Image (tube, rainbow, N blue to C red; front, side):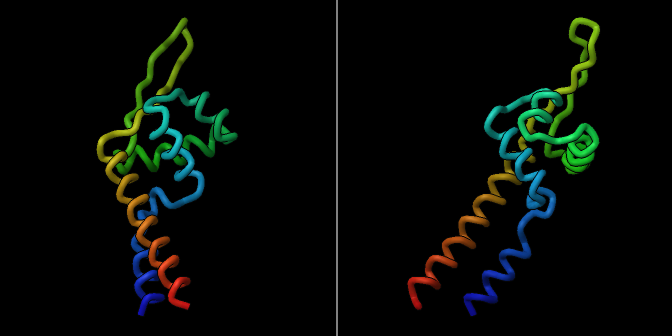
Length: 110
């Protein structure tokens, strides 16, 4: 029964956040609040195309807010996590903690 419970909970993890690179992006955004595209790309060692693709997924789900501006005549794109994105991340982490707790309990019962 516990194994079934873990599997069903695992399957309900948010797929938008659960992908490895997007999880790293969300974790970074949670920690810094707002960041520039170039900083995010450098910190996470991503290519322009890879980062852009993942950010479009977050934009589509309204997990991030995008701001575009010119600084010293150079384009600058910045991202900030939205309230919806923060709630989704907190729910994701909470569910992951519950899954880990189930695993710890089942090991103790062995």
